[in-house]
Length: 372
Image (cartoon, rainbow, N blue to C red; front, side, top):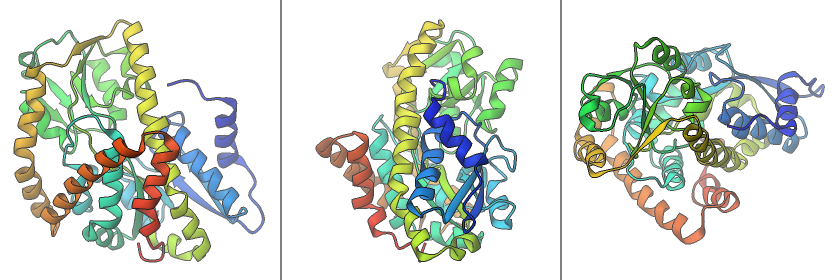
């Protein structure tokens, strides 16, 4: 990831430190991503700045990065209890609290059409998953603005070349990645990606299954020696705007509407500037550092073929065990939406402006801010 530009730095400083107008309500947003994480820089900071501008200063979000208020697993409870007004939530960290949302997150989408995956995730979360809204409400929250990671890959210490080299290795994985790690013959380890850096350095972890951008954002570049360049599923959505429900309801109707109207830009910033473009730059930097990218092959691709064969039954069983209702219908909606979005992206284009418009037309124009 490139260093922060003066413009982005100014935006972050404005959000963190600026004195807000006398009539403004300041809301506290706790991000467990580090201050320079691409999602903070390219999605949240610009979104909060735009919200402040659009509402003429009546909404001022203060971004508190680096897990100063809560880590990833603790965010749903921190938001629901009012410790902070909003945060980034990942359902696999709390599957019993967010079982329906986790049933989406746990399905590994094959291929590398990240924009189609992100579109499908937002459409399912906002329009095709009544259980998601119900569990947000039960936990004192509202949620919107999800995104897909770029396809996960194995990033490892040592010089792996064949699937057999994975046997017995300890690999950080979450959601659907847990099953992928097992299919590869390794042992899944659950931990936030930020904690994996030290574990890799100490040798208590051998690999991370995650996005290539993590080489930079979490510092794996200094310890990884090999990246298996075979896509191991796209997962999500991490929910960018997981907000305390009482706080949301206390906002004016116009301010709630502004949050939804600007959501497509938030999502596009997270996935295009914060994921896709970063991956390209980080891959080039990693290769320059001498990290070996092992080419995709039928042997590696077979892992995802097997994952796709197994995952529906596994995911529906887990959803039932965690208390999700109607998970099969949600999954059917999700897969149909993914096929729809692949066609939309192919027909309309993949630039940021087009993607934002598609997100608005297909999803957020249909969302009632007063009913989420």
